[in-house]
Image (tube, rainbow, N blue to C red; front, side):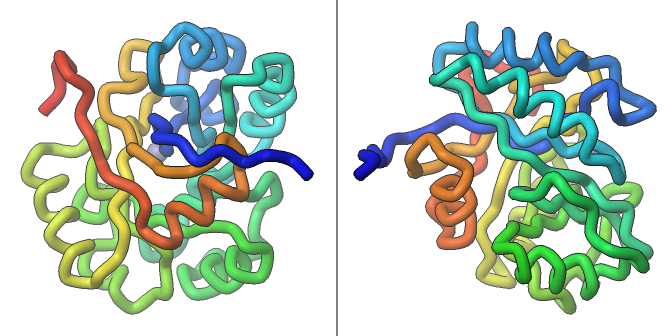
Length: 208
Ligand SMILES: [Zn+2]
């Protein structure tokens, strides 16, 4: 039997690679940054409406036993952006929030409302969807939009995650999610669902 040791992991749960048309981050650079980081060893690759980046990054990461890439995607639903973690396949269209949530549940993936109170965010109507978590700390959102998201998650009783939404290397790891889980995709996804997560700003971060 494989031993699964629960530890406190640091994870950046929202990253774009060059497979997003607006990002400059190469998968190899992301892996090297994780390998060199003292405590952020987990990253979710969530390109816009594409899973090519996460597939490429997962493949490269297989050579690094202490680095974990969560495959995922940021879906541009008709009512705003939604992260799906734990899949390297796209949900079937049309991309309504309900259909994306249903698809994610059918494959035990996790849905997170990305930056709800920013452009392309779902805003308050996210409460109508059976999502697993709310992104309460986004590296590209204002302090106020993040505070509003944190309050929103609290009101809904949903876990709050953090991700940088990095599109450039300099934006990586400015915020992170602390997760109590073993270093495996299944364990991390289960921990997010049960709320064993907290949104954090690293000591000395220039943001927030
Ligand atoms: Zn994003």
